[in-house]
Amino acid sequence: MTQTTKNKQATKTDQSSKKVQAKDLKNEELEKSTEEVTDAIDALIEDKTEEIDIVDEIDKILEEDCQSFVANYVQRGGE
Image 1 (cartoon, helix red, strand yellow):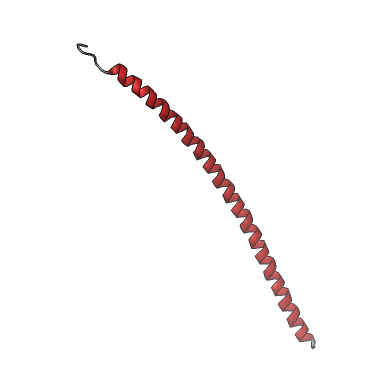
Image 2 (image 1 turned 90 degrees about the vertical axis):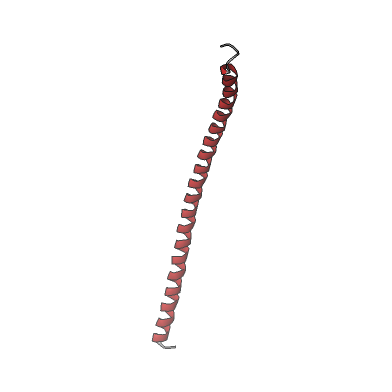
Protein backbone atom coordinates (compact mmCIF):
# COMPACT_ATOMS: atom_id res chain seq x y z
CA MET A 1 0.00 0.00 0.00
CA THR A 2 1.36 3.38 -0.93
CA GLN A 3 1.66 6.32 1.41
CA THR A 4 -1.02 8.24 -0.53
CA THR A 5 -3.51 5.39 -0.13
CA LYS A 6 -2.76 5.21 3.59
CA ASN A 7 -3.25 8.98 3.90
CA LYS A 8 -6.59 8.81 2.08
CA GLN A 9 -7.80 6.01 4.35
CA ALA A 10 -6.64 7.89 7.43
CA THR A 11 -8.42 11.03 6.21
CA LYS A 12 -11.64 9.08 5.58
CA THR A 13 -11.42 7.47 9.01
CA ASP A 14 -10.78 10.87 10.60
CA GLN A 15 -13.74 12.43 8.76
CA SER A 16 -16.01 9.56 9.77
CA SER A 17 -14.89 9.93 13.37
CA LYS A 18 -15.61 13.67 13.28
CA LYS A 19 -19.07 13.05 11.83
CA VAL A 20 -19.87 10.56 14.58
CA GLN A 21 -18.63 13.03 17.21
CA ALA A 22 -20.73 15.81 15.68
CA LYS A 23 -23.82 13.58 15.67
CA ASP A 24 -23.19 12.60 19.29
CA LEU A 25 -22.85 16.26 20.24
CA LYS A 26 -26.07 17.15 18.42
CA ASN A 27 -27.87 14.27 20.13
CA GLU A 28 -26.64 15.45 23.54
CA GLU A 29 -27.74 19.02 22.80
CA LEU A 30 -31.11 17.78 21.58
CA GLU A 31 -31.56 15.64 24.67
CA LYS A 32 -30.68 18.57 26.93
CA SER A 33 -33.04 20.88 25.05
CA THR A 34 -35.80 18.29 25.22
CA GLU A 35 -35.34 17.97 28.98
CA GLU A 36 -35.49 21.75 29.41
CA VAL A 37 -38.66 22.02 27.33
CA THR A 38 -40.26 19.10 29.15
CA ASP A 39 -39.44 20.66 32.53
CA ALA A 40 -40.88 24.01 31.42
CA ILE A 41 -44.07 22.35 30.16
CA ASP A 42 -44.45 20.39 33.40
CA ALA A 43 -44.09 23.61 35.41
CA LEU A 44 -46.70 25.37 33.26
CA ILE A 45 -49.12 22.47 33.59
CA GLU A 46 -48.68 22.49 37.36
CA ASP A 47 -49.29 26.27 37.51
CA LYS A 48 -52.37 26.05 35.30
CA THR A 49 -53.74 23.13 37.31
CA GLU A 50 -53.40 25.19 40.51
CA GLU A 51 -55.12 28.14 38.83
CA ILE A 52 -57.98 25.94 37.62
CA ASP A 53 -58.41 24.51 41.11
CA ILE A 54 -58.62 28.04 42.55
CA VAL A 55 -61.15 29.12 39.92
CA ASP A 56 -63.24 26.01 40.63
CA GLU A 57 -63.17 26.84 44.33
CA ILE A 58 -64.24 30.45 43.67
CA ASP A 59 -66.99 29.26 41.33
CA LYS A 60 -68.34 26.90 43.97
CA ILE A 61 -68.41 29.65 46.61
CA LEU A 62 -70.07 32.12 44.25
CA GLU A 63 -72.67 29.55 43.30
CA GLU A 64 -73.58 28.93 46.94
CA ASP A 65 -73.63 32.65 47.85
CA CYS A 66 -75.58 33.50 44.72
CA GLN A 67 -78.40 31.18 45.69
CA SER A 68 -78.69 32.67 49.18
CA PHE A 69 -78.41 36.24 47.81
CA VAL A 70 -81.21 35.69 45.31
CA ALA A 71 -83.35 33.98 47.95
CA ASN A 72 -82.95 36.96 50.30
CA TYR A 73 -83.40 39.57 47.57
CA VAL A 74 -86.72 38.33 46.18
CA GLN A 75 -89.38 40.86 47.03
CA ARG A 76 -92.06 39.66 49.28
CA GLY A 77 -95.62 40.71 48.68
CA GLY A 78 -96.20 44.36 49.65
CA GLU A 79 -92.53 45.29 50.10
